[in-house]
Image (cartoon, rainbow, N blue to C red; front, side, top):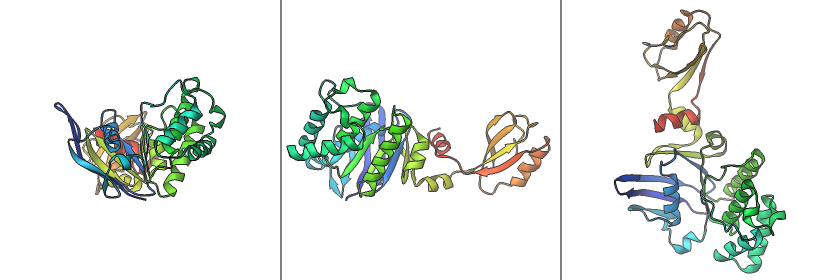
Length: 296
């Protein structure tokens, strides 16, 4: 299996910079979560990876080779805007897409049976796509990305609109493909899911990569958070304490961002000065916290 490399990709639309020297790798057997706000550049990156768009500069490599037509045939792609033929039946459509990627008719039929069974849609082969629920359409779209046994998976918002059972099925499939050595990259706004599922995460904002690393690395790189429950404390009680910044204050429960080297005993004394303290505990920031900080 090969590494997918996004190598200093830039893209501009008139005066708008969509991507600014974006660079990262997705390694074989890795689940890479690609997160960012709407308009941050995620979909543009994926479309350039697939050759749907061209970059102004930089290149996309798979195993050190530029992504040309032959390489693109080995990529499984799931677009955010679903690309299925709504009036075509599920089985023939998936077989047709598999054959477009080079499978023989018999191999295509076998692959369709395997993946529709795996994704729980084997009873829908004779239904047209537009007769399916949105969740089942999503499963068919994933089957279309998998049916040709891709060397790399690129998925744009694959979990959007899925119920919890379908999320579990898709999560298991992505883990299964990664464990076979396939590099898997997917974008998602469900940061709790990304935090739980991914080996590494990249946070993009305004076309630039703001942070890349494992979840533990990213969570360890940010300021620690201190939760203080002092029922009588009023907003601003921690103002003036060096290295402490209030993130939120609700009903006497304050979340503080604590820079390295901050005197936590000074914070405790300030909290006790307001009255009783029921909780005083440190937490690592979540991926959601890091995301908010990166895109702020």
